[in-house]
Image 1 (tube, rainbow, N blue to C red):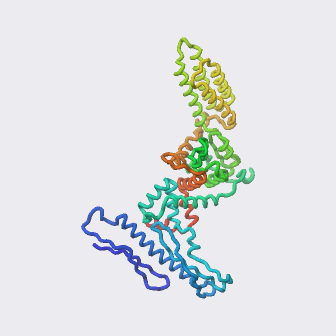
Image 2: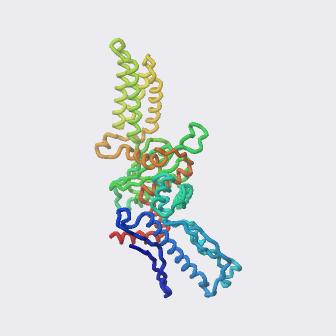
Image 3: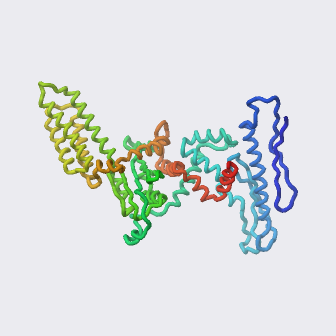
Length: 476
């Protein structure tokens, strides 16, 4: 069996149809591997169709520019050159003539290259979209391997070009972000009262992760911080965001846009949960008049668990028995005060909790023995007191909130840090990152994770929605 695949091009001006042969196939005895098109044949077919279609589209476009739109005079050609245009189905050299402006335009002897001006990026939006999407989810090298495996663009893309185009997309996204402001509360209380009844509270959790820095001048500069957050609505809709703390100049604007995308009203409650650090605490202020700021219970229990482990370690090391009742009593008091401290914090009783911390410190100083964990635990206890004292205004009655099914922990943000930052930047990744490179990649990555990247490209290139609608129609 012999097969010839042709393209038939119908001109709108009445010219005869053009028939271009794209591919010839031969099939003999039926074998499983010869049934239908092979991947190599499909790549060749797509490349041939793309070449023919591009050539005809460019020729038709340039034909419309040969005459002046105002007076109809023929425009003379200064010369021509080739421009490279990368698509999903290959890289092509397109003829780009340079045309003189018509004398009626009164521009003098000025010339321009209309095709080069229109194709300024030299890359098809669909290709840039796919490169950005996959490079946001996996390494640049793996993205190249995956795209060249399924598309006829082998040896025409490389990790450096993908990274460059991803940065271009991220910079365009960043350029659309509004200016930073000290506060984003709009209107006055009278205006808020006239707004429609608000929806359920929006829960927003913030946490930080760390990325290996490329410019490591000292051991302490080996990593830089990435702030990650997740905003969850009652119906389950969630948005994630991330930025490099020391690089981003618009963190509050970024957070405001996330809340705005979830239809935040000024009379709607927003519950912010964080670990109490100054960076994330300052970020939350003056974003909503109905905001509530809570210290995350998860980070409290982490510190209390560390204390418990240290007490267990001292018990194992000292091995108190009937001959040393004083040591056994002190260790028992340490655990009792720690349990009481946890109970008071769970019920929001900060003054009593601070007293229990003081009791812990006193008991440790009274311990005459000097186990290995004693100095470490003293340091942990003192740091914990400073931590609770600085955040006491943000410690609610966790028990009451828990009984009313209200959120008390940023555990949902811990998983967000894992899949937004760690999986792409840290785990099994040997790369070191500049702050700029990490920040730009984070912006495209959160767009992909929020299912917003395609919508962004359609907003930039409305024609992409036409192909998407046609695909959905054919599938139906």
